[in-house]
Length: 558
Image (cartoon, rainbow, N blue to C red; front, top):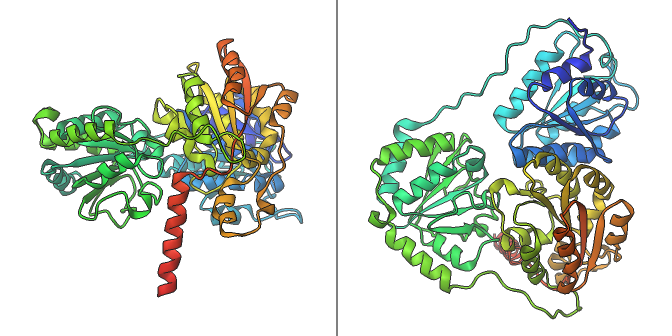
């Protein structure tokens, strides 16, 4: 039997769950990385520890496969905290392998890493010499079953010591229990009696693989369908309205508001999805099926805690028969929807002329959609520009839109996440990163990581020389804009210095440089430094600002 160190045992157990590790080497994880390499795990180096967990997070969002991030102890660990918090908030299974204080006691430079993780909602599993393997397995199973981020901590004085012998059972698949008796029967009765049914799918439905069952259910009922931004096109077909919430059209939102019965499948009904309380009509009956243990929104009238795919299959059995949409009570509902979607306004087209002569981001997004390769996987960083991709770009599949920072309301994770997606994409798709100039500067060190990892990547920087969301929220109130402004950065020059192709895009005609690169094979990385105006405010942000004002007014009245 080969002798393994404690770090080697951790790597050995992880190798039965995953193939990819992202991180920065340091004193606390050097032995783990050595063992990982000998075990054949693929290590993708990043240049900032915050990118380690963000890349592993995005890898899972794209592929559905677990990955690990790794850092050293202390400052390496604390550098990764924003990405760790995002993974926890977004319910992404991911493992952070990190060094930690010696088991004999903390040194002057150590911090209480477990307490910090607990404050973020992440559990820490500190390995011991005799149970390094079983503790690591416990951590991974915890992450997978609870859909969250976990920390596997290796005390500094144990990392290189010989691990004790362990008998490790094979990994087990989590069991899923469904509330079939009663709960789903009531759901079936409500759906069968609906005249204007709507099925709204979220990321939970996508992760459960419930798309086929929900589409069949919609056809059986003649229901309209929609998806959250993280389940785009999961239910695309007859009666599909597109994305629900602030990224959707007013025409689609109007139809959703007229639904009499709404089946919410694997969606949490966030304020953005609900258009801050205005998406669904006051008289609609709202049903939620989710893996959560309780309803996630006060509008839910009937709740079933269940695996969405299994529950949808049971509903098909309970409804029986194979009635077509034309024979269902919802057939007229679908016909009306088709007519109104055809005749109603879509997204605003944007303008050729702006007050400052820079590009209108709406017309730019439309032009980019026509230029970008059809086989694309989009990574969307956080910021004011966050809606342009889901609103204006074709997103082929739910896993082809990775929206990072939305759960924790952060910016700057885009480049790091793109590294993870670059490793996860295996079918010749082009990775497209959409970022703002502020977030891009935050993660700039990992542009080099992306260039090294990606076989085909396009980076679109919505460069308004400002923190755009703050300009619209606070500059519009008369607050000083000086802290909100960013000196014009030549991202094209920086990109070329690191080995990417690049161009500054000041007009739509300048996109010819990107088109030429794509026509030549789209190999490597191309950075499009797009100079956009800050005079255009996204519709979703206006809705959020109005909701915030209304909430403040209600508080002041009380």
